[in-house]
Image 1 (spheres, one colour):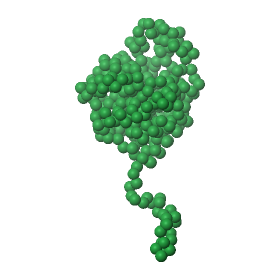
Image 2 (cartoon, helix red, strand yellow; image 1 turned 30 degrees about the vertical axis):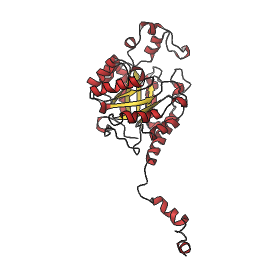
Image 3 (spheres, one colour; image 1 turned 90 degrees about the vertical axis):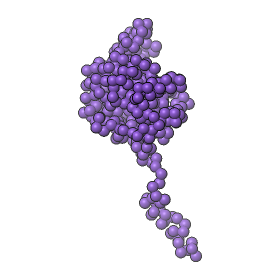
Image 4 (cartoon, one colour; image 1 turned 90 degrees about the horizontal axis):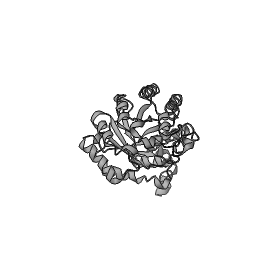
Length: 316
């Protein structure tokens, strides 16, 4: 398992603006609402992510639906009725929500199975509830990264890291967001995620070089750069790692065919397992040679290198 934050005593503390390719990225398996509002499924997903996938964190979502939606949005039908869990969009969202006590149970299950717990919060009420659980970090989703009442509460009252996704966000909005964290003196706790908001996202729209742009613009000031992907497969995640992403977050499901709009853009357990394994292998490979000749090369050199195996003949 990569270091991650895994509790107060083992929180990853990076020197500001410094990443190391030899350290694996922290892998976040985002359950989100893929539990379908069922705590039994949520528990199973925690166990599978921890024991089979070997992920570092699972992440959920928290919404205060009446606070988040307008009355018109609440009463409207789901835009894709086949994926709806209620007669209206509001009822659908309410069905998928876990309350604070349920999130407390989720966090306890994560602790039991040695995997980190995290949650994205969409609104002020949700932020206050999740802060009371004292998670390692709280995530602000792309849809709420301009919600400054929410951001202010997190900056003023939460002492862990604050992670922000930057999907569907203009460069001006990103600069406003970053400047807000500067004024709050919370840059050292900020993690920015390159992200394209789509479900799923075509490879031409993944735009991995945004990781480099964010690193050049803000890497010297903030805790880390992350990557939140909604593409198919895991190839782009490994590329994100080589570009310097220190956190990789992917939606995770037990079955892509399940009801719900996020499942198609999610990874199944075998894929999350492969991502974790490959990212840690790549981290080992992303090094310079520490010596001109490695120990593994010496037997081959003696056997195959012209001028070594036939030294007398070559010299003669």
